[in-house]
Image 1 (cartoon, rainbow, N blue to C red):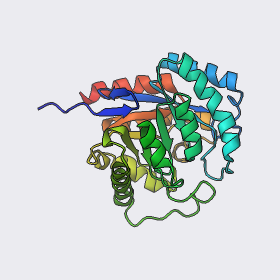
Image 2: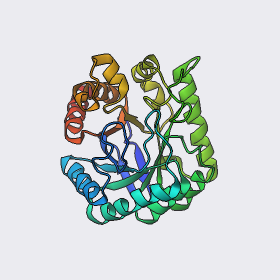
Image 3: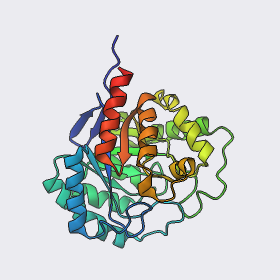
Image 4: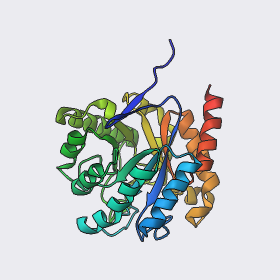
Length: 281
């Protein structure tokens, strides 16, 4: 019997993930690790978003607070100022789904009220107790990601006894908690959180055993684009030099079950995903 096509419901939209979906990164921040400051101006951010759609993005992920290791926190008012105008303009002009990359319920609510479809919460909806209620209120799509620690501390000696089991158990618990809160499982996807409170070996182990997360019954999202682990493996210090390494990692991720790739490099990632799908049959 053929494998059923996974569904991701995001408000009034239903994504049938019969192929790999591409989530384009749109940072409206001055300090994100790769493109911080390039699209800080709202008008520039909207142009960048539309360009990513032209390259093949199915989702645009708008973030107003950097979560790179060591990043300083941003208050609600500033994050709202950065994010909401961009979301509102993209909802009007971009023919794709819009995601808001935030851990703050106030920001998520404002972005959803402006028309966004998805909350991408790197904390798995744990840092703000009001986040589950916002997701339920709007019946939003929700990315549940695993992160050990906070940006200021997460790369200070992260430790696991068994990284795959611990990350998987966290995601199982979060899926259950959000379901009890009133968000259908079909609205959620899972992300093991590559680079978020993990050593190089933790990250490699998670990617090698990505198929373990398919057992959760929800689509897997992977964000490895331009990350530090790629630089460690290739001696590429600058993030923009890590495209080839990222494509290799993303190809393996697709072959091992990833359905959504979050990337800065949409066109190249889209091409790599199509080849991986063809090889996987």
